Image (cartoon, helix red, strand yellow):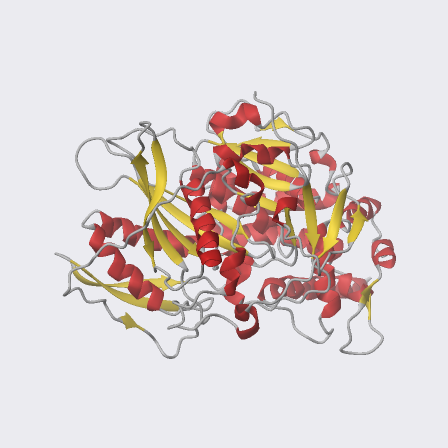
Length: 560
């Protein structure tokens, strides 16, 4: 194995920051951020204070920095309104993947031009059917649709290049163009993470997967990708359709790709009227539907209904892949490692398997948000990211397995069919992290599901299995936030919070969990929120379960 470069991998800590994002953007919401040190802009006027922090992994210490992150216009005013898509958002200047900048020296961005396909002059965009009684989030469905094609170079290799961009932004200054180019380069890497090892094919099953682009301020955008074989005769390379959106809703975008693929088989020109209609349509609030009219030759006008689930924090997840690849006991061990913010690598052959499993694991942490590096599919050229000493969730293709399993203390999970063992590498204590009684309760709740449960059934059973764990371990947090006056920010009393737990095993676990970044930033948010204020969508369900549990305990105490 070739010698690898050394890493400088640090953390960003956003102190006392209140984020009020649209409730439809739950999946991409972060209370803090970790980023590679190379992402930090050197500013002579503002130097972040450096403080030493302890790593919850019980090993490597890391330095945390306090950063003042300015609000963008979008954060101040809400979502972009229709008609503003041609104005270039200031936030575009920050669009880099967390890992992307660290490897900037590895990548040579070639000059290339993207072109939009000309549609016939008589092509009319289909109207959008809206129900005025429905509620909408005021956001676009997506920011970009790009087509990534494999083009043969003079050297005879196939290189991924963007051949179409919609919408195309004009009037950008040089800096903005450079930042957009970096974003597009990252997109090509994620759409074809295998690199240049491609050859023309006669058969290729389409596959859908997702990835995450992390910005300097810690906010995330979601990339949804559908790879397929374009219509034609003879051997030809596959191409990828990629949608970039701030909205996390895998199921909904997967349905959109079904429509894209259907139209692609007819004609390339059929895709863009559909995407234009989609962009003009308002993004529905959780539990609501938007209907789009779309014309297809020989089929006539179709009405496409796009519905979001009521529980918006579950709309980016499909638990079926996770429980197909792992047993209940194995899922619980992965959950335990993730709760203590350890380094976890998932290995599989299929890109869709990697992205679905990693996103499912992050949802198991609800209402807490994974604050560290998350790369659902690591491009081969960026494989050195596994050397980072700080916590991460990484998805690595099976052929790169030998390059990632020799990285010290981590959990390497094989998701492949016919695997000899699931855990290729472990820290060794994954089975004993969780309190035994609470672990048994999780396994019992998971065992109650049907063997062939649907996605909807799993979305109900799985949260009901894992959420009570946090209710019983840290659900009493509000009782230990002291406030001098009502409505003022509070102060969390950590020592008393831990002492309040009667079970020694639970208290032992909680003492470790309160050291994690996900808990720290959750508590910071609770400290800033007035005690009388109801939580946002992502925490409201958690707080509801806390009240239910406390009512049961009180009722049980009365009986005795």
